[in-house]
Amino acid sequence: MSISAMKPVRSMLFVPGNKPDWIEKSITSKADSLILDLEDSVPAPLKVEARGIVRSRLAWLAEQGQRVFVRINRSPHLYDFEDILAVVGPHIEGIVISKPVGPEDIDTVSMMLSEAEYRNGVELGSTRVIPLLETARALELAYEIAGRDRVSAICGCTAKNADVARALGYVWTPDGRETLYLKSRAVMAARAAGKLPIGGVWQQVRDLEGLRKSSLLDRNLGMSGELALHPSNVAVINEVYSPSPEEVAFYEGMIAALEQAQANGRASTIYDGEHIDIAHVKTAREIVALAKSFNA
Image (cartoon, rainbow, N blue to C red; front, top):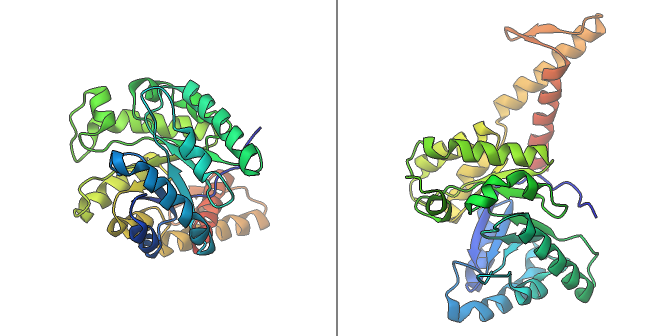
């Protein structure tokens, strides 16, 4: 089983699964994907109710053209099969799992998904998995996790005072020096496995300038998108991870310049003061195609 490549995603917005009105309003945020949360944002006594609410909203969200993932619960030893069975179907793209200890957890979840897909009449192997790398061992084994068939993206998250900070013992700072290595490691693991690296999470949700700086750092490192905790953060994240009109024009000009050089029998040329050849134009084509995919 090998799952197809995941469509690019800039923003993935967490929405508490026990808040039906929030779920419905969340589509106005323009997040590329929602993560309907059954885990940390839902109080323990409301988790069964939240599961039913999420299940009841999936078809409606699909009708709105909204991409959806669901974050399931885990006990100290195993992920929640009842959550999986309730949500697996044609209206979700995949599930998000917290705190895997290693690739073994991905294998276990994959078997649970196969059983749920069989019971719910869904194509076997069609449900994606996005692990949040929040344990020291998971971060150490990032490539092994990213290489699992169902995994379409891995999240190298470094929220202030959250699970990763506790697992590694670092002290969070706004400039992120203490997390540079682990974020780069997550990017390299994801890219080597042909998957998407997702960054985040910015907890100071009212500090949009801080969010912008943090997201720019992640994008510069190679992240393809960010997790978001509040609808107000989505526009900033989408802007940071979208090639600007100026960038698109620059790279379209680069493509045209090399095509002209090739027509004149040359394999390289000077464009905007820079030496370019086919390697640079391959990058240019990818960036232009990415911009078009977000505007489609």
